[in-house]
Image (cartoon, rainbow, N blue to C red):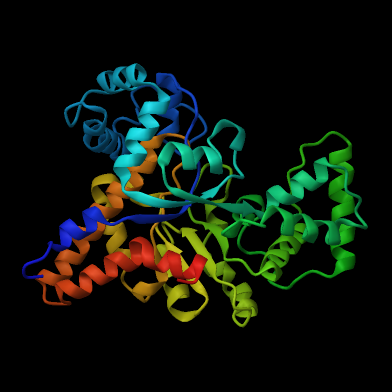
Amino acid sequence: MTGGPTLEEVVDGLPLVDHHVHGVLAGDVDAAAFELLLTESDRVGPPGVSPWDSQIGFAVRRWCAPVLGLEPHASPAAYLARRGDLGADAVNRMLLGASGVRRYLVDTGYRGDELHGVAGMREVSGCDVREIVRLEAVAEALASGGVGAAAFPERYREALDTATADAAGLKSIVAYRYGLDFDPEPPSRRDVVAAAGEWLRHVDGGAEPRVSEPVLLRALIWAGVERGLPLQFHVGFGDPDLDLRRCDPLHLNGFLRRTADRQVPILLLHNYPFHRNAGFLAATFPHVWFDVGLATMYAGARAAAVVAESLELAPFGKVLFSSDAWGLAELHHLGAVCWRRGMAKTLRSFVDDGECSEVDAVRVARAVGADNAMRVYFGR
């Protein structure tokens, strides 16, 4: 790009759209809580095993430490001390501001009481923020409010309309609650009422209103399809609450065939280690897009390998950026940093090998970093 910024400079300065992310913690955390939040585990590791000694731990010390005024590779103790001195609000503002993300699509459905919500994220980041509504969370709120089984199908659609009045999209966590190998056919109303009755009896008996009944999960998904907003699916790795064997996106093949003519975008989130399978689906189904969020920051110095694999098969207009960061502002920052570094390195190799021009490489980076998301969610 003679006379203009280099590919690396363009990628480093891109105003990103993080199309799948959660809020940041509003309060401070101690050392033990911070370390646990660096992992997808729900428990502390054994003696001699520390999340600081991992790709993401190294990445925090390399890329977040300078944002907080420390030297790169500062010790964990020095990093946590500096973080404590600054306080949560300053840390959040500094790391979110340095990420270069300019628009967040925030999933508020997981432990939202601990995090900044849509309004809080707007205030602390200075960005445009829109909500992604979890289908299951709407059903669970309805159950807590005392809905009857016979009225559930209609009441759910009404509640979904209300919850999504200003939302950018929807999300299903059927991968966690059952698996992606669900029956792709929409259930009958009779079956939905029967399943709702069984579920609500347990809720009335004092059980947590956690919807995991497969017929109900299918009903929520199809209600989401009927709502018409972009519909996200968790795919691939996450915390130990899921069975990774049932999180391969290829299980969605039947569902994708049945929704191909609905004009509803389907967004496959995360996907690692099935990201090549997700790329195949995005290449073969016009209404499917995907990302490799979460994996890039956990891959750290190896993020370029994951990014490169995401660009193997699918058209570049089908790949989006996301972080899936939750809680720690470090994760929001690293989601952007690791993606930028991985994308710049990958595209530079394409240019240097003569596989594409630098102009085309810049266009791809802009598409994946922001333009594709703006087209899918906002029609522009």
